Image (cartoon, rainbow, N blue to C red):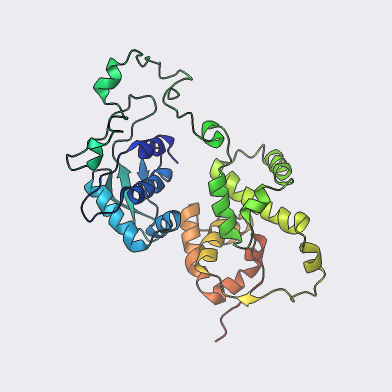
Length: 317
């Protein structure tokens, strides 16, 4: 996530064109792109991800992306990402770092907002330079670089850039692992902070990146909920073996999730990875194999080690 891109997306004034999408919907799609932008201000969420983020239909999202390109706010770089190498990579145009002077996005004469009483609330470069307070020149190695234009209304999570936990990413990971678990209920519980402290102590010496910390913390919370804090886990434990297990095929979401988990499972890697193979490449190869029910059945024991519950319905032919 790029904080600069998110701030820029909030400040951009959208254009309203005849028969075009309404401005609030265009801003929502742009914010979703900015929220998933990297430090070089490029974003490549899939259309399905944008549909889920914005709760719009696919046709509307594609139309708005075309309009944002016409408005000069995003550019198709021509690069493609993802497992299928078909996800488009967009460059956000006009994002400035927080240490730079903000500039106004150029608007054409057909924008109705020019006649609005609120017109001019985003200063031009000339207006900003004429203001009585100048932006100080700060050395690049100063700890204050980039803090001057930081919004006062940012969430505590955004201000504390040293914190590893992102609740939005944690919600997504837990939803992928088990859609039946209510994320909000867990985070409002009295035991969630206790488990977070225990998790941080357990991983203090492992030097994991933020994304991996969130990835493993999702599993940690789910296991804690099921084994220690759920009101139903005791009654489930009393059931005969297999009474609550339901034979089924893996869904597409489960295939992608468990492929990622198995690609980081040390025992699985030692047996099935190829020399020099990256995590991403291994995960892609695992996902392809898990689409075959017979192969998924062979790996059932490994799947259960990374969170799968139930019984794999193998090839019945």
